[in-house]
Structure formats: structure tokens, C-alpha cells
Image (cartoon, rainbow, N blue to C red; front, side, top):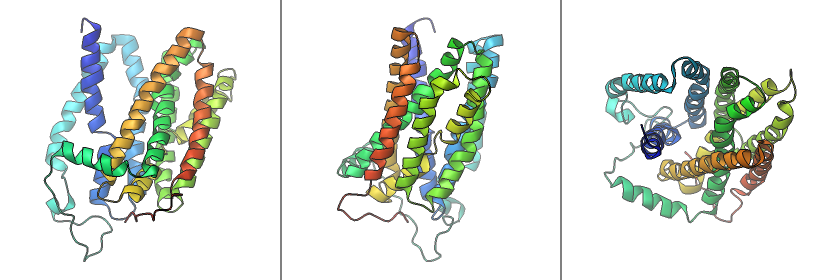
Length: 324
């Protein structure tokens, strides 16, 4: 790359398309096709593994950048992805019927899901139109917008630069994110288990509320030597993307099983837009004020607002659709 437009095209567009098509939406589709029960737990495991992999590898990649430059890291990640492609082609199948199996937990007399060949774009737009008629869909999209703004957008992008502002080395700062990734594996998996058993609205209420309190604590954490950033990393890491399993379940309850995975895809789009807004907004704040503190405070406040918004889900007069 020799010009900014090349960075925008290759990193922003191509890498963005690639990560978008292999992220949470694909996981939700896999869970819907392959599992009739314990969907929340499985979605929690898949989501946790994605986020944990991102965060745990950060210290390794940061050390490689420090020693060898970013090109080596980029080529190394590309090589790993290339190795995964033949493994997926040989092992992964679209549906249980492809290998003569039934979805996990499905009743013996349950009918197989019909495979309908439709235009993917038309199907996506049609599902959006049907989902948009439900108020709960917009509540979920709005809460997930805040989720993206306060995780990938804010903390995922700006925690390391904020640590550098406070004299914390880059590799050590990346280690904090790795600690958060390990905690996320536990927290999001537990969230999936809980989403199969408890009211998902209240789960989201607690997740967003506790995340907001953690972000409000972060400016103080930078000033504490012992019980500062490590406490934040553990507390926030447990809640990193624990919101995903309850959101998937509530989406399916809102729009039905047929449109659920596609509707969740649109909700994830709101999450990613929120991530972009969060990353840009925090960058503008840091540039203008030479501190991230207002960004942490605003993020904490909107998370608390999201905790109240999600309690309105399911309050409309229409009857709810069953998940399973």
C-alpha cells in the first residue's frame, strides 16, 4: 500500500467483508440449523471463542509488530486463514442431513427443515422488511448499536492507546486485552447457559448495567496501581460480548425461527455501525481534549441507558413467538 485509499479499500472494505461474513451471524445460522435445544449455550461457546481468539492473540501480534513490523503480522494472519480454508471445505457441512444426522435434541418425528433456493439479497431485504414491523427488533438493534460502540469500537480500539497515554507499554496493554479475552470465554459461555434458563431481558439488563459501571470506573482504574486495570479487565472481560446469546434468542422470539438468523444479521449490522461510531467518536474526543475520560464516561452512561431500553422488549401487546 502506498496511498490512503488503498488502506481503505483493502483493510476497510475487503477485510471488513471477510470478517463480517464469518462472525456472529454465521454462528447464529449454524446454531439454528444444527441444534434444536441448548442453542443459547452453543451460541455462547461459539461467540466466546471468536472474541477470545481476537483478544488472546493481541499480545503475540503486538510483540511481532514491535520486533518485525506490521507487514509480518498481516502476512502471518493471512497464512493462518489460508490453512483453515481446506479444513473447512473438507470437514464442515451445511446441514445435519448432509451427514445423515438430525439437529441435536430434535424429536425423532420432527420434520426436516426445508431447503429453499432463494435470491440471498432478496431474502435479506425481505427479512428486514418483515422484522422492521416489530418494535422489539428496533429495541434490540439499538441496544446492540450501543454494545458495538462500547466494545469493539471503544475498548477494543482505544484501550491500548489510552494505556500508552498513561505510560503503560504496548505489549503490556495488549496483555490486558488478552486477560479480558480469557474472562470473556467464561462469561459469554455462562451467558449462553443462562439464556436457556432465565428471562433474557433481565440478563441483558444486568450485562449492560454492569458494563456501564465498569466503564465509569475505568478513569479511576488508570490511577490505581494494584486494583486498577487488572480488576477492570476481569470485570469487563466477563461482560465483553455476553450480550450475544440473549440477543439471538430474543431476536428469534420476536421475528420467528425462519427470519431469526437473518434478522440477527441486521442487528449485528447495527452493532458494527455502533463500533464505527464509537471508534471515531473516541478518536475525536482524544484529539480535541487530549484525554479519553469523557469517552469512557459517555460510554458508561449509554450502557446504563441500554440496560433500561432492553426491559421494554416483549412489552408490546402482540403475542410472542416461541423460539423452539
